[in-house]
Image (cartoon, rainbow, N blue to C red; front, side):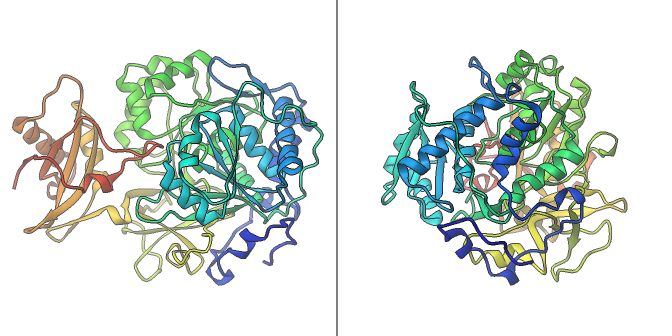
Length: 539
């Protein structure tokens, strides 16, 4: 498939796409994925909804702030787009860095960038100067829209030639500009987003996503698994720079004309209170947050939810059952990737099998492959591979060859597929523990530990050990009031031995006050492998 004529005057993104022989195979078999050649996803998500449902529908909410209607979001995004073009000379294809917490102003800026035909580079608000400088260098950014409260680190980054325009002030950004703006007629395969991987294992990678990709995840996972309706109110905690957050808090609700409650920052307990106060019906967050909401006694605050999506890390069956038993809600698990933009394996309602991630989302196909790239029989451990309407295109990065092989996106996850096509997570491929010749899945040990009433959170990794190669080591956060000592260690070890094969039990247990996590709530197992405090261990 050849690329369409581009609307981008600045051809940087097209110039830095990987060679075509390194692209994954793309699938557009579903009728809903056959997009026209010219497509601007901002127009489809906003202007088309206004034309179809009217301008007065609630769109963006924020705690203790006025609700923005679809018409207001269209007006403000048009004004900002006009400012970008008229006042700053932005041309289609320019990359614009966006920095700020989840709020309506950031969403308006995101839509404005896409309407202007530019490329959105949304960044986590917690990133520091060095990280921002790296992103700007990779994406060749020289313009930024930044929340007025988050400019210090951006200025400290020393990005050459960077122009910064602040938003969030009392006057309103571009309020004097006309609301009449004609969005750029981009190609469906023009790059709309540069989404950066976390960079926890080295220099971050920029993943390139087309305008059609933004809609494809809404028209697969959201439309066919989540199944939202226009009366839903969404919320969640992942930042919009995290594609899990962008999809769940902006793209999916707006695709159906629903509304979304944007939260700048909230603990799990605060999230539960906001769900109750605003009568939220759809929530997106990580498994640890769902577990923490239960642990803080907030189950009753979740009664308005009809859908709750868990992603970002493995959802243990124990957490799924505890949430179902406490709230009646069956969590929708899913695995996605920045490279794929959003979720591609999931299950909902009667299709759920607790402990399994799910099956390939309609529009996608998935397989488990061996080290030679050949499919393995059901029940065999291997590497997860996926194809669909979205896929990996790194910006000028040799690691493209590692992620895409023989047309498959190789996600870096180890899975087992059963006879019914359900996929069961084993570990991140680099998180498998090899101890005394046994392959042991850290997440499997974590799930066994989490079934114990005294374990609030845990992380399991393999640490170097002269005798075994790696020692299965559990870092455990105990529930309040419970002490960690040799007796508790022995109790937990015996508990695990009764739930999974005895050779998998944690031979070392380290009690910690909290686990290291990313801004999106993911457990940082690599930090657990750093030199640790003393632990109670059994040889």
